[in-house]
Image (tube, rainbow, N blue to C red; front, side, top):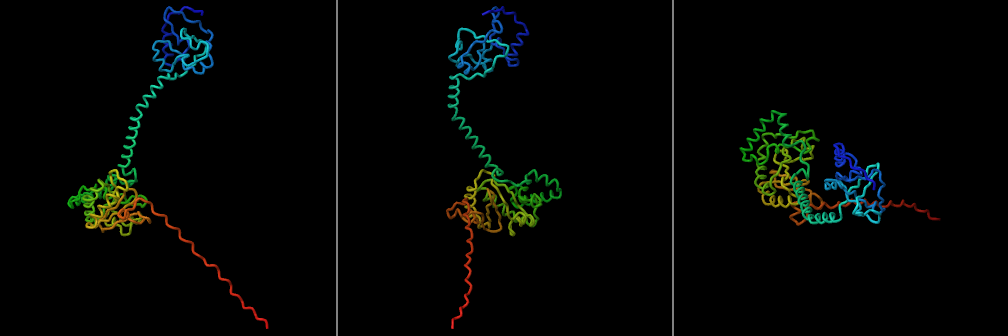
Length: 374
């Protein structure tokens, strides 16, 4: 091989080598085989080494022979001829393979050696139980957080949050004095702090569609009716299902009719509250906790218990009764279905279609008597 003396390294050459090392300039073949001072360099434009087709197909990189070879390997430079076969010079371990051309050398990302791939696969298998366990715990945590928030299973009243309440109160300065009186009355009646006052004056979830107000303070004459309801919530409902949130309290007649409430709804007289539990609770668990409590303590307190969709339920102190949409016909209380051993969450049975009326065939026309021959 014809060689030429290696010229002295100058700053420009070192800078170009550094730029090639970090990928800023294309890597030239000669830069992959730097020589120490005093050594000979190959003449440029020498013929390419011939590689067999099998070696060319399985070429995974070019062997780096520069300082910091480990860094170069991280950049994707592999070894030449490690996985080839059948080609001339593809396994030449004793000589350096010099490739020179006017074009930049092709860059092949290095494939991990077989023993490293097996090592990584074994490590992944060893940590697989821990990974699966962590994912399972994360999923359970997400489900618990979802159940803990009432909005995950059902929509809470829109525009009736605590921030909306403060905005409503600031926009209506005349209501501030009434709210102070209402809170003072609760403390005097022994029910202060059972539920936040702003929740007690929520109207209906459909207030926006009905053109009503999100909050409304009931007339003073109706306040005593809420005292018994709050006492029952404090003494019986919360011990059974935990903390609850009131989503509907007083409704005026117009809003109650628009919200499809009963004509004799206890909300009209401020006896009733619609509640949702704040702790993770399924609908079946809600039935199993409230129904025995209502059967035991409801008759003496004259409490009505109703169930709506999801985990929303109704409590009032007007009279003892219960209702819901369970049973074969969808018109029974879940408590009644539980008492007879049925499934309160079973869908109603399909109603049979009315039989088509039987139309009798038309009567034949009367026959005219034939004259008798004489």
